[in-house]
Length: 321
Image (cartoon, rainbow, N blue to C red):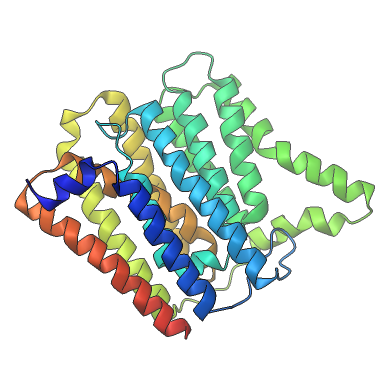
């Protein structure tokens, strides 16, 4: 039996991944006590320990919700938890995730938005699903306003899932503005309309001159893209084995991943804020590849992936130090 098959079928894989993830977070926590500079909404700094703790809790909860997503929509043929293990290790290996609670908030909202969107598949009365999906997307955009740029993708996804009609489209608009309605009421009550306008000002901010990545950011993005691209191509080549619904779900995740990569490439300052969301489709597609394939080549790919994760963590930590 290949080493890959032993790990992917073992019940100890997820607890081991959680232990390793915690160890990596603690190592970064102790060696790099950097402040979290991306505060939620206001952009104020959080205490470095509070930001790290919030990021760890959010990343762990988001990773574990991937199990529910897979069990509900059968993204992987078996009830595997490898996508959660990969998500935990990817988040742990990228210290930029540890320093940006706003990005972790938006990633959790993004995952919930995807869950609700998939729930509307082939439903005639899909308005409720799209309302909830876009409400979560709007809530995530309060933390990272650039998440708003994914709304056309979600409409295209709803169309591909046969969940888009006039009523559900209007419901999605109401859903997206729903969290902003509460923000508007809060800002008006306290006489601080700048609080309501801040996400829109951030959304319109574009630096045409800032297209440079730090070395650690470039290496991290390259590793994630290699993992995402290989996993996505594998799905495209083997999609005929899946149900139509599963194909639609995974096609959407591929498009969402490409959109997030493009957003980071065009605006490198968004790297730390969009990276947690980018990890979600990457972990799902990589987990699907490693669970559904069983060959010597996939065994080598499996080993290289996890060796690469630890090398990536070491390199990122070294650059921060």
